[in-house]
Length: 457
Image (tube, rainbow, N blue to C red; front, side, top):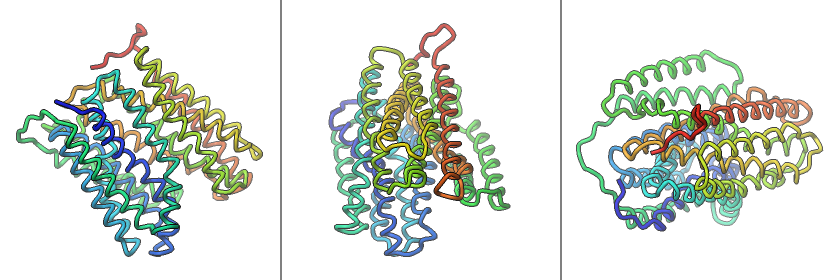
């Protein structure tokens, strides 16, 4: 539980930590061509990003549970230290192989930065305040989406790509100082039982699964090695479930999935993660491959999403104080559905302003829905399970993105331009509209049979 709290300083600390993880993807992607030019190893290009995402997915629920056992501050500190250690080593990399290994370390720490801040918000703020704070946190993602590519380009051109990693150090240290000064936990110190068996089986099975998806996305057909990896993942997940059911302090308490509000939030979060990664990946591909515009126009087309997302988050915060979670979520996903349907009507001569408008609608819908689901998860359980609950929700969103980019890629034409690409992307956009419709249906279960909101703690 949380004692005395200087809330403004806590918010600042969490926003800085969120900024580090939010900007990481865009700033590194921008610098990758220069990194490959300096270090070579172009065959490892995608793994610099993939291995970071993989370890983040695995460590997210682990840090969530450990935060329940040992306290938010100490586990947040450990996560930030690991992240900064990985960042420093990444900046010192002399080969692409080294960079991949050091990014793995960085990704482990990122699991804490993506989960524990939202857990702390659930502890330190009332239900009415959480939505407003989530709006501020969402604005960080929007700002990062805008300045990430610009900052990455400037650092690479004016200084050195090494500094896109070194720049994390002052921000991370500032975040730690602010949190330790402003947040005081009342935490009972006692010997805790760590679910080592669950952590190991989860890590092995998720690694096998995500690695198989990555290779499958590249090969686009099932090989013996891919099949073997999927079998390892399935057996591992089965063993993991068995361990969690019998464990004294399970890493991922399966009882969470009996909570109707959490189950709905996690299912919808998985689908929204799928939609999000496809939108952010394939709309720039449409701009360059179908309409034959350059990468600058791709960035311009995507820019409104980064702006309207935080507006949607702020709007949801104000609206949540007046109405139910179900109504806000359903409205947000319905707006997202309208935006996805708008994608279906893209054609060769679709103008950039119209693409910007559709992206603005999608971003506004995401801002409302994602923020509200996060508040719902924070509010659905008590302090002792909040870290694990946030970890499970982030896990489902991340899995949605990992599976989304692999599955949607099956429809992608080998020809990355022209009519064939247009046809394949239309198929993906139709799929996204169907998934958004399914998300609306899932959100409908937030209401009980008598039409009232599911209860929150």
